Amino acid sequence: MNKYEDDELLHLKNGDLEYIQFKILNKYNVKNCITLRYGGVSKGDYDSLNFRTLGNDSIENVLKNVEIIKNAVGFHQICKGMQDHTDNVIILDNCNKDEYKFENLNTTLVDGYIIKDKNIASLVTVADCNPIIIYDTKNNVVANVHAGWKGVINKIYINAINIMMNKFNSDARDLIVCIGPSIRKCCFTSKEKSFKDKFTTEFDYSDKYLTYEDDKETFHIDLITILQKELKKVGILKENIHVANICTRCNSNDFFSYRKATQSGKKDYATMACIVELD
Image (cartoon, rainbow, N blue to C red; front, side):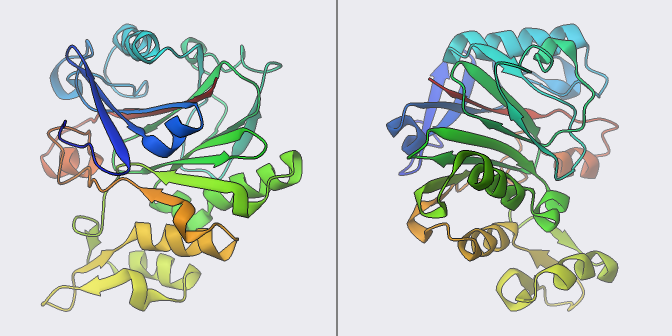
């Protein structure tokens, strides 16, 4: 068994390339992957499977990395806009897929995609943020969402669910939600009261997600607990929420971590990819 394989995940290797998949999504033939750091062509701080186009890595390297994972997993057309921690979610379909081809470097601000048509892959990039996949088992509709701490507060995942309900007649009880590797409470810390207030103003159950160290100043925020609680509020069944038990900061040798890069004095950082497609 490979390192990150467990009840929730498959950990697959193809030469130097490594990625994980959610077993529950494979059960429904939803093509999915979240990449590790390995198997790409990028160098230096981006070594080696980097998908970030806004840093100092060459676009040529990033496009080669996209082609590597596309061929390895068998994705068709991979699409992406520009992420900016918004709550913007679009429906990606056969009408607009060419506009959002990865190689077009579309600058429309989008942090979530909903797909009903087959053979269209959406890609979100992450490096400590939460990649969230939402699948409607009855209507065969899937969402792929990027939710950092700002996205958690702005509830982009709820926005995606609401669109699925309004446009595709989804029922919350039929939705499966998969939350990939991200920074966890062990490493998501701060001493800034104003930062803490951003959460306590929005989520009134701080005793569930906020803990303090012995100095009474340093606090830890559990984004997974917030996500689980907010998802249950809109009707997602507890047993339908699947979480990868991986902290990207703790496992930064295998996963890109923005916090690790900044704490190490790096001037730039790389990102992984979460890619989803309906067969």
